[in-house]
Image 1 (cartoon, one colour):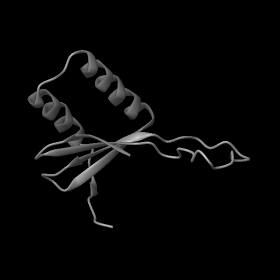
Image 2 (tube, rainbow, N blue to C red; image 1 turned 135 degrees about the horizontal axis):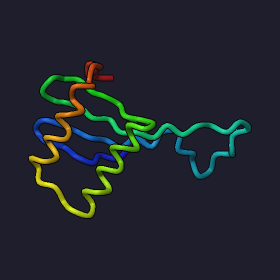
Image 3 (tube, rainbow, N blue to C red; image 1 turned 30 degrees about the horizontal axis):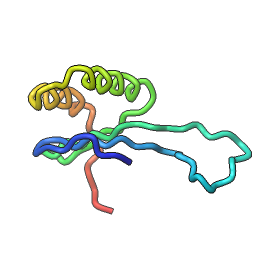
Image 4 (spheres, rainbow, N blue to C red; image 1 turned 180 degrees about the vertical axis):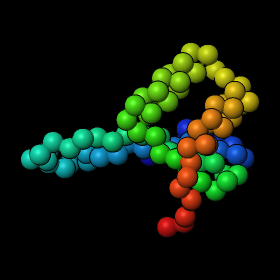
Length: 93
């Protein structure tokens, strides 16, 4: 897990799910890696997990930003677009 962004309104974390331990033996049956991104809307207290094609599109946006650094306003505007998908309430574990 790697935190990519943290502001007063949003948190974005990249999840490296099913990442094998270096010392772990290879599984007998191959596992599908489900890497993705978790976007937390602090204002609403909800989060959304992007995987599959959603995660690929989000990664493309991040890669484009690596070439041309966006302003905080641009980042917040883009994350606002994903906040409409956030339906899962945040709970503490």
